[in-house]
Picture (cartoon, rainbow, N blue to C red):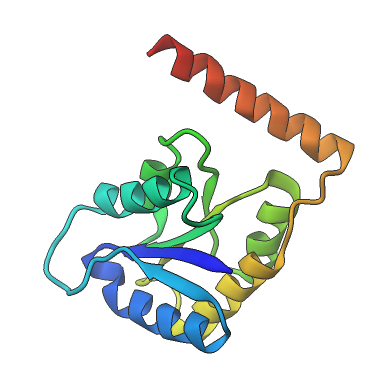
Length: 152
């Protein structure tokens, strides 16, 4: 699978570890930065992943910052992005299965690399169930997004 991977300075080291792990697992990783621990703004990391998804380069993205919260908030501002902070494997797969999450956000200051790798794999192995109740709810989320995009 092609995956967009991005981080701010706080998530740089974990991003590097995740990228290497994903490559070893046979995934194609598009590294969208940052490329050092020099301070950068986390909204830029979220925007890079959203842009790659919008352009059809990837179907899923992973963004890492200190807590995961900032990049999640920023990523969810982009149409079509459904991002969540996940620090356990259950949430990572259920958010895809029930909510069609397409961007995983992780806090590098919250969890370690081994758990982060497990969470990313749970996220990537999961697929949206398409069950009627989940599709109905997803349709409502999409409709809300479309109403507000149309206003701007």
